[in-house]
Every structure is written in structure tokens, then in C-alpha cells.
Image (tube, rainbow, N blue to C red; front, side):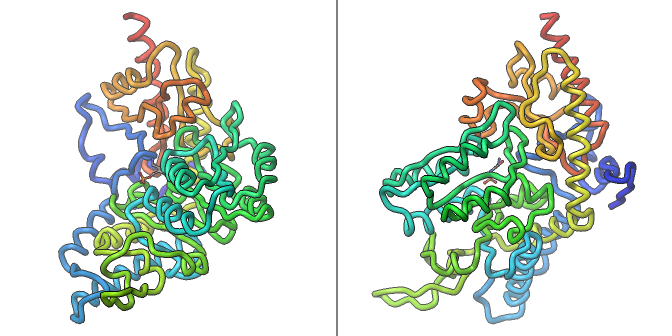
Length: 419
Ligand code: PMP
């Protein structure tokens, strides 16, 4: 890793690309790949790929079972990875971290386990119009099964949560507020600490969908004052198939298990079962063992750069992309304009050209972006759009990618003007 300070608040993303084997290959256009789809899933640095290979090659056995050296080694490494995740999000203990497959599973775990135990008809769940389906559909299901009501905090025309609307709805004393830290469809960074404070004053617990924030900025669960946090490893340079739920320990201890079976028990007889201590109570079956080592390696890589530097880098790229795109006729960028309220996710539409066509033309130019509803159909409905094109930045992006993005927009407009 070579981090050069091209500006005091930004490092050389281009130099980091050498750490990611996927950038070794040229795009079929003959140009380097401009990868602008990290919000969907991020490429892996060599250290993560090597950690996976090392775990599978030299330290692999099932965990929490074997009374032999290799299994004890695998278990120690798995638990060490849990401690790394705990430290990374500011948890007070590794026991507050449950390994799951992804953020979706983490949120479902809360909805099933906490939700079905604590909510009944007449209760209120509050979410927002900004959510990814992962932080929306589980609450719809929970509401349908318990008879609880589900309401959504409105979003403003410039893609921010309407805090007056939040305040009004908190007056109805919801039991739970489920909100994303960063919107994957708009790029908005929500004022989570303020939301959590307001929610707690109203007597609600707070579930934070941090799938798009933990990879990109310092996140501390204690500072934010939240109760549950969901993250996915694959969006933060780690392997797919592993994610984490963080929750305050007393909440986890009071919650019934989500999945049941092996590993999560203390004692089983034919007439009944007692549960293992947290977090194992929530980890039924064989977990993603090597992937945990890969996730710890990804966190190590990010920590070496420094999460404040990651955020500053993406803030800088966002600012440049925002002003470059706003200067192009016929391009509309969604989300807040203030760089402090906007992550490195730039969602935009080009007049008269469907986002799928935009992404197809971009691909011919070696620019990889996402086009569609971004698993946030209510956000598209809010702005009366079928879809948007989304460019998202990470550590390996640089001003060169912003230039490739604007160049691809001009080329797309030209192509459709000529057609
Ligand atoms: N929440 C947000 C804001 C997301 O962007 C995503 C992934 N696009 C998810 C949740 C779900 O993540 P996963 O598919 O890894 O469960």
C-alpha cells in the first residue's frame, strides 16, 4: 500500500489500485477499468484474498467444536476476527457482535427476534422513505404479522430526511426507529446521533442500516447512541457471505434465537433446549469461517489508510463529481448538495436517456456504474423516476475516474443526439 498525500485531505487512489488484482486487467475498450460501483460490492485487495487462502489453506477446521489443535486454531482466529469487527465499530465487547451473512440478515434477525417478541397490535414502527428494501421489507413483514403500524419519515426534495416530520411522528411514540446511515440511492448521510437522541427521548430503540457507512467513514456505535447496527463485509473490501449485527448486550441477551440448531445451544434433551451465551445463541450452524478472517483483513487494510482519510477522500471526489455533473446541461444529480451531508455516491439522471442505456454506453467506455432502482423503489417513486444511474467512489478511485465519468456522460449525450 502506498498512500501519498496528493492534497492534505486526500490520498492517491490510483496508487492503491496496485493492491487490487481486479485492476490488473484492461477493460475490453483497451482502457483501464473505471470502477464506480463499489456501493453494490467492492473489489478485494490482495491482503483479503491472501487471508482467505491462508485461512482455507492452513487454519481450516470447524469452529467451537473440535478438541484438537487445528480446530482450536480456527476458533481462536474466528473469535479474533469478531474482536476486530467489534473494535472497528466501537462496541464495548466482542460479545455484542453476531456474525451473519450480510446486512439483510442482520436486519431480519432484529425483526424476527426482537420484533416478534416486543411488538404487538397497536405499536408503531418508524422507518423512512429513503430505505433500501433490506431495511423496509422486514418491517413490513413484522407489521403484518404483529399488527403493528408502520410509518415512514418523509424525505425532502433535495434528498434529506425531513426532521420535522420525524419529530411529529415520534410524538406517536414508536417502539422502533429503523433508519439508514447513508442512502445507497441518494448518497445522503443522515444525522444519526441526532435521530437516535430524538428517538430515545420518545422511548424508541434505533436500528441503523450501516451497510453504506461502515465501509466509508468512522462509525462508533456508542458515539452514535444507537441500539442495533447492520453491516455487510462485501461492501467494505471483505468477502461476500459474511456480515455482522452489533447490538447492545442486554438487548441480545433478552432476545430469543433467530435460527435454531447446532452450535447455538447449551443443552438439548428430547423435551427441551437451553441456549448458548450471546453471541453464539444467534449463530446456528457452521459459520463463514475463512470469510471472518477475510473481513478482519479488510478492516486491517482500511484502518491502515484510516477511516477519516477514506471519508475525506470520498468527500473530495464527491465535491468534484458534483460540480462537474452539475455543469453538464441535461444532467440532474439527486441528493443533498452539501458535501458534509453527501457520501461518495452520486445518483443522477440524464434527460431523455434511460439509465439502463446510460450504463450500457458507459460500459463501452470502460466505466462501470449501477443503473436501476437500487433496491430502493420507494425512493424512485418519491422523485417520480423509473431509475437512476449511480456512480459510487471508494479508496481506489481518483480524479481520473471523475474525468472518465464526465467524459462518458458527454459521449452518451452525443450518441443519443445523433440517433
Ligand atoms: N442497506 C443498504 C443501504 C444497502 O446499500 C445494501 C446493499 N445494496 C443493503 C442494505 C443490503 O446489503 P446486503 O445485500 O449485503 O445484505
